[in-house]
Length: 424
Image 1 (cartoon, rainbow, N blue to C red):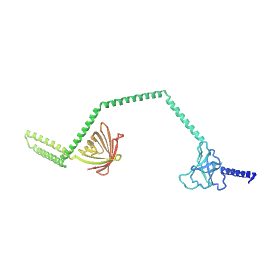
Image 2: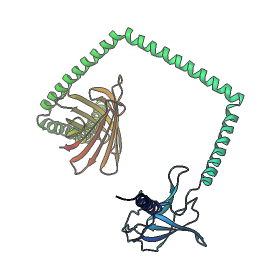
Image 3: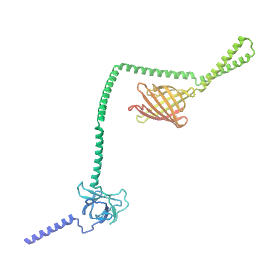
Image 4: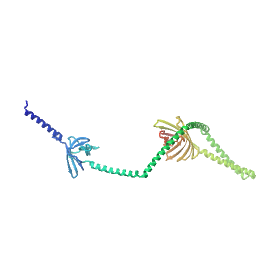
């Protein structure tokens, strides 16, 4: 059994051992490898001291072992724990835990690793933003804000400005009242004339149906009259014979004019010459018109990627002269077919049209941009104005790429089609 002196001695030894362990552990003493030093030079350290923590990407990796002033600035020596490698190009900053917390060295890794810092390497630290600089900057901002407030007070404090603002507010109120009254009046008008509006819509629908029937009859009539082109050939031949006959009559009358002495007969010959020349001129004009008439048909297939719908269109353009033309066609074939019948005038560079567009009254213009690009704009339906924009890019002599935007003036009803057109 231990004596009292032995027990006291044992307790004392254990206490001294615990005290030594605490001093060594809390003081950061090490009897083995202490790591390696790296020197960072700052222009100022803002209260950084020996023993402060060193962190790499937020992880504690060492301690500050020395802080001293050098001609280049303040040199901070950090002791990096054994086994920790710091990449070259890392940024050394001075941070703090909170506004008034303890300072520490914060090492930020580089984006690209090109090597490892050697023991004893000297790096340049980033200049910290001092509290004094922040206060000075904030003071400048406050001064600018004060100037702005003073300027606003000068403007808003002016009696004329106040009066103008009050008058503007009253005007806005009056305009709002007028708009409310106008909206109410339009609502009453719409209710009172609802029957008339419905009747007008029915009339327009009936007119559209009649126009469709007329177009169908015109197509049949044109097919029967044309007779596969034979009618045009017969008409041309007839006019040519008429012209030839009138020329021969004119020559015969001219040869008799110098022989006949009877005054009455002479007057008849002169009248015959006059009529023959008139017939010849009219025949020439008719021949020119017949020869200048040409027609070109076209079919196109368009696709709307938003709705997944197709639109098939067909039309015939009849040129009656170098400038005058007519267009007969149908859009959206098989899906609520819409008729087109327009007459126009112009050249390839610019032409205007007027008539029925998509079953509604409207006008359009066509212009050519360069050799291959053509652009068209149609405005139609007076009761609910709609605008259509169309472009054609000619790939070959008969084939074009088509882009068409319908109802571009409508926010909720606009749609875009792309496709191919082929002319025959």
